[in-house]
Length: 209
Image (cartoon, rainbow, N blue to C red; front, side, top):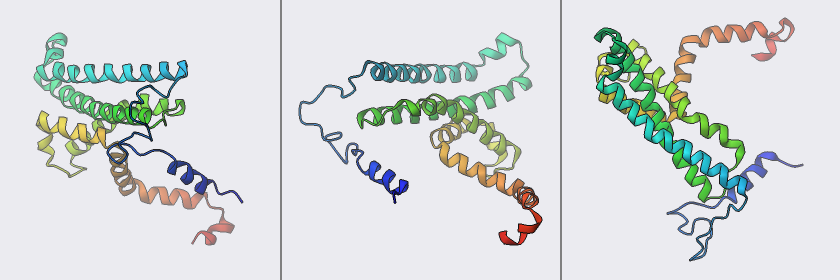
């Protein structure tokens, strides 16, 4: 009987390693400089995604600088108190985006070099920076509320710390999601368990124990 898990593992084992483990980048011979992506659609797709990430790499740091220097405060005529929140959470979101963008760039050039780039992961590559920004925003909000005690809640008044934490959350977004899951289970775990219990028919309630 065919085992899809074993098949998937065997397929993964065929993927070439990347330097420095495999300095030939997938068994390339010396002097083999041409791209192995010969289809025009693939070339166009790779260039499009590379251009998209390059734009983010330029504009996200520029937007961080604009917020940091306080230009929106002058443009919108905001008070210091109103602008403080916009500055904190805007910097958090953009810093997360920057981390997610750098991770995305790394994934893109690795996948192209290892010949595992494909269209089905395009949505992941497009949305990763924005998901990372949202996660960084949530983490800074949780720290500010005192619910997530990684730092003292007053520590996130430092813009440098917000940039650093936001960047790390964005770059390591999978770990950030795992941490948020722990928090959600702590807050809502009991109620979720009760809801699952209610969904079990009375006749089968004992079978789940």
